[in-house]
Amino acid sequence: MTINNVIMKKLICLLFLSLVIFNIATAQEKLRFGFEVSPFLSWMSSDIKTVESQGGHLGLNIVADGEYKFGTNYAIRLGLGLSFAQGGSLKHNEINGFGNLFPNSNLSSPSLDSIAHGTIVKYRIQYIEVPFALKMCTPEYGNYKFFAEVPSLFIGFRTTAQADIGNATDENITRDAILINLGWGLGAGVEYSLNSSTSLLAGIYYQGGFTDVTKDDGADKNKANTNRVVLRIGVLF
Image 1 (cartoon, rainbow, N blue to C red):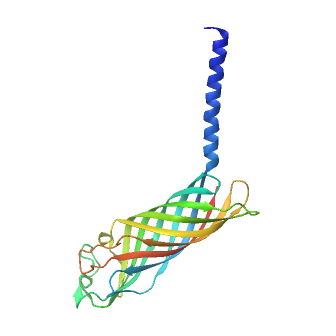
Image 2 (image 1 turned 90 degrees about the vertical axis):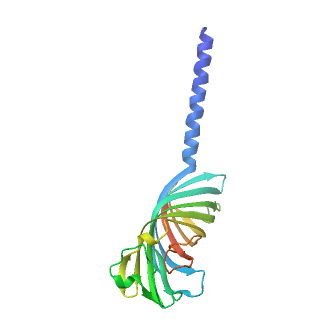
Image 3 (image 1 turned 180 degrees about the horizontal axis):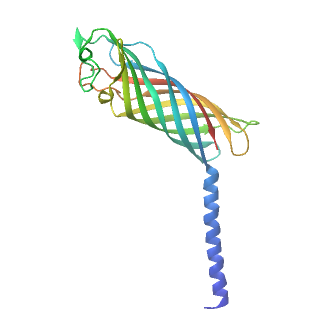
């Protein structure tokens, strides 16, 4: 093997190593990570008129986010987080007389196994959630950049569920809450650059569920969906 061949092979190896390092560095420039602590107002809706929405309540999302930038103004967002107290209150008028809404749950009193017509139930469900969204951004104006996320999708895996049934509070209804919740959403917001690598963000989102969140094993035969208006507050690095 001649000296020229050795030098050529070393140059090829050096070029290959340089390309690998360049690709890794470029990928790192396209990746951003962050977290958010986002309060939301949640309520429930039903597909039958005899089950009436009776208002919502406040909950909280805690999410670790990652963004992969492609193109100049586009990114894919993927996250993993906890969503506390999704749900809302429903008035169950579909029950003719008395009925058992939660046949799979061990409630605190036998009297709750059969509730009266018109009983108001307040649902609170906790999920491990995976959000996924297409993010579209404007150019930066000063330290500000505006964005929209359409579509925004999420999948939630139920961990626990509680309900206030009439005057009975904090009843465990986990066995009567469906394991998986799928939903969609859309939102918009603003990023404020603190420096070249760190940004604060804030946005407003609407999210609605595709799937029924309660099982229909008992007197409850309606499709109950969760809905949220989320105030997204976070930081990206």
